[in-house]
Image 1 (tube, rainbow, N blue to C red):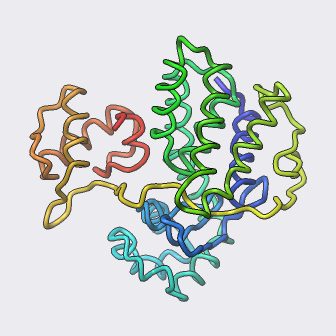
Image 2: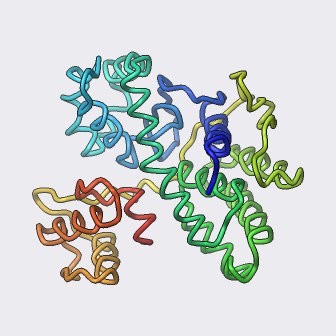
Length: 310
């Protein structure tokens, strides 16, 4: 179990990677040509392309006293539908920037990143037998940045199961595998994000598995001072084809829906295996989410996918 200070240190590392600041930038709106995540926003930069920007803004609009909630609410359907024309919507961008200064939005972002990324990262690290805070930070970074499962499987194939290889062998191997994957990626922007793995390699080299502070990440001191990271690249490594699965009309269909059905079947739920997201699947998903302490919204987003393992 990580201490609160260790959790804050782990999150500060990712905040620096994403916004150049130890506490992140709640008002940061970014759009880079070639980023599969498209419009990105907030403390640790969640994306329109993944559908997670919708989840964040919905939670903000649902919160009492959200200063920009009424103005942002009309955008919810387009955000849920991943309407990529929102990339260039100047009004939306201005509203997001304004909302970033609202303490209600800051609280919503803290809760959102904890619920959607930090808690699943901690559970995934624990499931692999990891105890060191640095290991959890590596998993958390990959869930934020994207493609955790892909590199996890590549690493296991190369060095073996984490339990057999041991945490202090497997995690450096994962960092090396991810660095190579980023450095050779077809998206040239992603190649520039190898600094994330270089920073983890420095912490590993220094033996700072406990994330003791003060420490330096990308030239930024992780302490009370919020300094700027040098030339952060805010491109997402999320696969744009990975969508949040939910009940729609007409219903969603495809192999990803089949994968969800298969995962819920493994959990003991009686669902179809036809690749159609129907009301039966919606009910089973909500029941599973409630049983596992996840918000029972019937949306198979990153937290649900990570914990279900599909």
